[in-house]
Length: 251
Image (cartoon, rainbow, N blue to C red; front, side):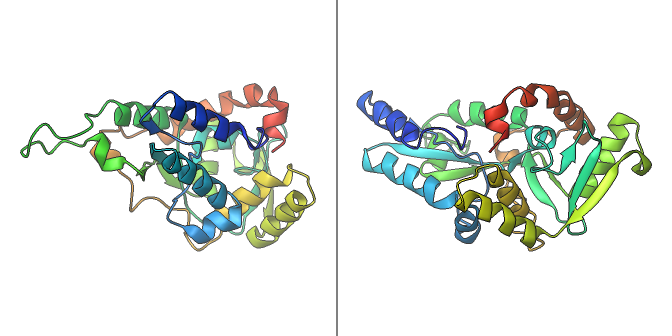
């Protein structure tokens, strides 16, 4: 659900699910570690997501949320305010030294994870059944990843896929804290164009707070390893599609 969606949209969907006696809800989120309260507060997403989960429980349902980090292909294609790439201008904004690594997941990997979780038995068949069950994830996050990469890792992949070199790109550097503060000021002034700038800059702070590697449950869910370069190609092919979604890209 886009950040620009009506503020009551999520609640209306949850209330409808409760009326229909739906037992489980996967709330809008698809982001970072829900246990990282500080990061959630500083990106403004944590309190909103917590309110969504609380409402689900209050209405007698249970939730399972997906903690996947940024969508790799979407964020690569999403312009300068996300992973820093502008493929039309062939420019790149590098946060700090470009070496801070972030957990990311491709849209395909997220889809596989959701399908796998929803296909599980609710409970073990008996005391000898050690397979994962839906009950393992109730009112918790499902943690997955495709890659844990830095902007420099992404740039190397982009150059391999496009057959370009450093000389073909215009590269600038930005301090993550300053970029975060600028984006936050825009949002507080009512300009949602600063939201992605604020969100991604904060996630690339060099404190490693947006890495999900230690919690990733890929093996438990039987998720495949992926090719970084193939996923980069998918992201580049997505650029034109996202440019048509003006409202989404403005947030």
